[in-house]
Image 1: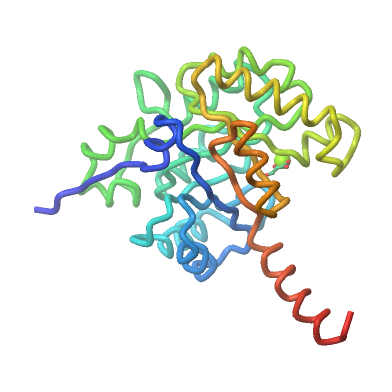
Image 2: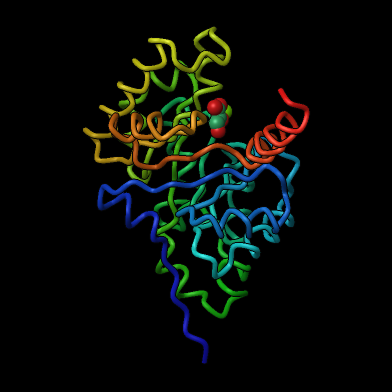
Length: 258
Ligand code: 3PY
Ligand code: MG
């Protein structure tokens, strides 16, 4: 008989207060997952909100991660029970839920992820439980699925105290681009109002014992050191499409002598 061991080492790291580094997949192909796993990231999130990936592509992408050490996560399309359920059934061990602006919306995300009695996630034979072979083991381990609520609006920052207080929310993941839009300063992610928002979110997380996270795009050593010093633990570094473009663009510029 097969024996199954389901667990999420990223959740363990966060509970121990240790940082974890992930990255972002928007180019929906398993090869991309294989390449990024080889880099050594703790986790990889497929972006189901701002890419054209569908659920069956999601399954294929995380098949590319299987056995390669990075924990598969998803930035889900929206805060919807069925949308979230299908990605969890495919095998996601963490969901990053966009636009969580209130405790009610945070509760909705938790309900979607947790099985009864805490939540309303339906159970069935699926890839996540090895098509039923690991049904009981998976259900026992399912609290290991990470629930990260995205803070990416002014409203969410204003309500962060009530959001972090929702039991079952493991952490907050800040989206600097939407947040800058919400403050009326599109793309200006270094303005003082953004730093103040980060500070407020970090303090709320600290008080509630939740993991603070951030999508970080300035990938210099100093800048990454800076956000770790601020206190962020769940850190997404860049995005696959930008890695391709920056590498290609550097090569092209070198060739044409710019
Ligand atoms: C944002 O910056 O708005 C994001 O959603 C990053 O993932
Ligand atoms: Mg966003």
